[in-house]
Length: 197
Ligand code: 5GP
Image 1: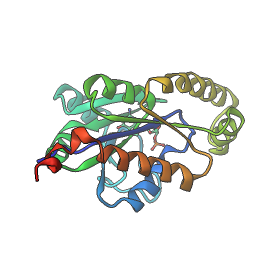
Image 2 (image 1 turned 135 degrees about the horizontal axis):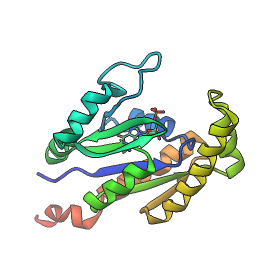
Image 3 (image 1 turned 180 degrees about the vertical axis):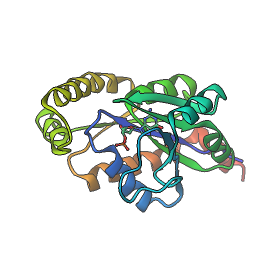
């Protein structure tokens, strides 16, 4: 059985990772999504086990202690983590699996899974990034400034990824990432079995 791809889509906060990944998952029904665990409260319309596994801080700590995470990070006061068992299970079944995670988490996955496909999503410009961060409307001027400065620092880390895609339009960015996934699927090293006529 061929091991599935580990596709990591990441980028600075406010770049629109979530929206782009949703489009990819709608388009590519043969790509599985890794549902993360988080300590943040569910937003309206979110259900446990679908967008996230919603855990208490204590439950999250227990999962850490039990080694249940491939990676986890504190993102602006809430913890987020990628459950390890689902990833391994699915890849071993040959499923290609997509992770949408923050930059700290992606750096940790890079260390643990160097065979992953790391895709960095860039905003079209810093002005646009600022607009998108402000557009959330829930922040004080101080926390907006912190988020923006962190985002700029995170963008510098994008150079360590395998691919970069600019999120100018959701459809175009999703189409580019879908192209990357298809290209990765066609790599000779992954398809040596096909040469055995
Ligand atoms: P939100 O609360 O808006 O859904 O997500 C906030 C941030 O957490 C986003 O940047 C998202 O990519 C990131 N995130 C979601 N799941 C994970 C995860 O499992 N690990 C890490 N490191 N970050 C995550």
